[in-house]
Image (cartoon, rainbow, N blue to C red):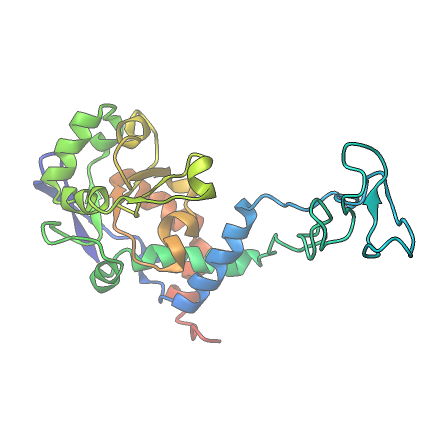
Length: 272
């Protein structure tokens, strides 16, 4: 299957053969499950100090004093105040997170490779891209392949003009207009603004493209060798609007050669 390649002004300049990885059948159930498994690798393990709330100078005063049988501080100025037990102010925290909790999910390598290949294939399905909420009314073709010159752009003003010529800017405006302001502990920690997910630009050599898009809301630029479900299927939903730089097409077939040989070339039943 041949797809058009577009230049910086949005004009078709030639056609190239689409890699066979785009023919991999789409397994949304596999993508969904392995996305959360892979996302668990980003979570920082946490737990509590085993003696938190217990490591205090408190003792039980005994009966006959007209007070409850709760350990209390022995010294001033807190003498008589409850401690240690969960019901007391300043006591231990009941049912707190434990350091033994399993957060990191182990993933079968072949299964993950198949899921990533399936997520790449989903970026070429227009109905899946629309179902994620992307605005692609002015996008000339899905999948969108652009000339290698895009990788050399290092200014945001220049990449903005290119994205407007390619019909992608409307999706960035969608992200910009849907910024959510949240409160609570997230705001204290510098996460007050919640952004949606916009287009993904996949390149082979970074000659400035990552610097150009870093201030565009929702836009990401990633090396084709580092592609993962985190980038291709945010939230576990396949079909992210993706812009493929032309020189990334060949490495895709090289990376997923074994998957292509099994599920495309040999015609093996996908469910087997």
